[in-house]
Amino acid sequence: MPSQSHPIKIVCWILFTFFLLLLTKNILFKKSITHYKNYFRREYRQYTVKEGWKQGNTTPFSTIKLFYNSRNMNAEYKANNLLGNLVGFMPLGLLLPFLLPWFRHGVRILFAGFLLSLGYELAQLIFGLGIFDVDDLLLNTAGSFLGYCIFFIAALLLGAKKKGDVLHSARHS
Image (cartoon, rainbow, N blue to C red; front, side, top):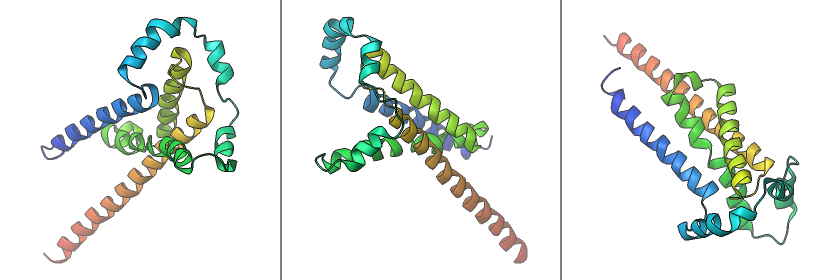
């Protein structure tokens, strides 16, 4: 591997790790450490997955429609929730294909985004750390694919620029 790309890859791996940590914090651990110490010490024993499943949303587009149609809900809250789920997963689609060539196919990124999101949603359900929502799964997966689209367009543009540079230098030599 050329020495110039090695530091870039290291920086991207650090960014990817930071992205996963930030995602975990924002999805699973929204509250203070003290809150979770108390929750797991006192409340988690009474929690059941069955109870969590009843609270969750398993109807696709239900939460999205609720947010869209709600006039009383804070607009900032709606935007943060919907856009946050979409934008929050875009780094996956941007960084993963750069770091691992196997992920340079849209279907593989869709699958990776879906699996990562499903993992977070199931963790929320199993540990009672949030509410399972199929719409989060859809938005997160779409966000990872949007990130991949940005990666793909950038790769095309950079590839065309490199080819153009080669043609330009060949003509002027």
